[in-house]
Length: 311
Length: 299
Image (cartoon, rainbow over all chains, first blue to last red; front, side):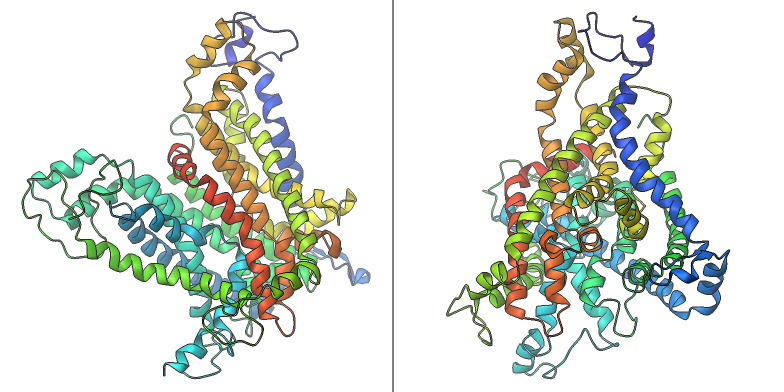
């Protein structure tokens, strides 16, 4: 019996109650619910996306459904300028958002890691937008950006800008407007993760550095930053994927407009499937997105040293 | 000046990111203090950016329609009454609570079982399973709307809250399971073994010894699951076309996408959407950072 339990890290308990599974089967039983759910609702859908990407499939136009070969992909890469626009915008969106969020999040974490009066409440307030949903963020910023009763009206009262300015419907301002709205919600993510990691920096290092006369900037560059490196790389990567994938905010704030100015690839997919019901084409676009995500996940696995130590 | 800080544990001075260095005057104290203004000035500026939007939505929710006053006075609750009854936010709220709690319970239980297996056993497909967990974090639900819709249609679960609960749970699982298995790894195996020697079954040893120690981690994971499913809206938008079944975020989206947006109703609806999240976070804040640093750092 104990030999049979060699799969377990440690010998089996000397006495086992009747009815309990043998340790050999136990781990499989324990992961079964999760594995089944993920097979059924992640793996299977992913495979069916690949299948539908090769089909003409539109429930509202059933007479055209059928095998399409690579037509959907050919259409995307050669005939659909919107596809390229969304790719470019996705890249711009992810780089700008993640870069700014990391910068502000790092600065904020360093600040609230200090000891000062009011730190607890300061932290709570600074982190508060983190839990706000994409839709609610949109609601809030729609109120702020409203051309009649939003912030521009009161700025105009003070002589800044003009009355009736609508940042969300002007193609020259819409990008900054959505970036700011998403920053508002995204900065706390980095701040929280970096703060958690900052708390594990050994104080002795700073004291030693101080004795050696290191300036605060030197301490930051040579102690804090190297310590945070791994956390920063991994959270940046995860956040980049998240910003690429997440469509809630853009879907509800601009709907991808005006004139497709703020459509990321996933948002384009959602619009194509939800509004246009063009499921086959949407699946082909999804496949392209998967290839991009695959690249990111390989980088992620490399960096997180998957399997390197006993994870 | 403020050496009598509120915090009991002094924290090593991490330098302010963008400020020029100021040589410590003397090394008579082991850690010198960052000048107060270097903390309060940037913090205040950032707080204005954080809090003005919150104030703005409160203002619109509480002042009468058509008012342009910058203080919510005279105060009115007409928008809340309207949104709760006329715009069915009462029903939405109930649905969202069901979805949130069911997702929380399912995610936590399934992740606990799987996380225990990952933390305590070596088994053949463990590596493959871990790989699948890590990779599935990269699979966005938004891109799987169509096949998921078809699956739920096949199962006759369209327009049932069950579809949303399953979908939310599935996409919460990978991260939750990784986190929980890290929390379990932090509990020494010898504690469990000692209980077995005393005649406890594996299950009982887990429940009485390990589970209480997992509290901060479980609170973090459970509240993530709740808040995430409370906030997320694409699944509900796609799978629940019946208005009776819809959730708060879908209701908000309906208000947002109306031809002429009723700003007062939108603001009141937004506050209704925010209240449970605020309550959850006020309650769990102290566990959250601990949970994060215990589980996520080595993740």
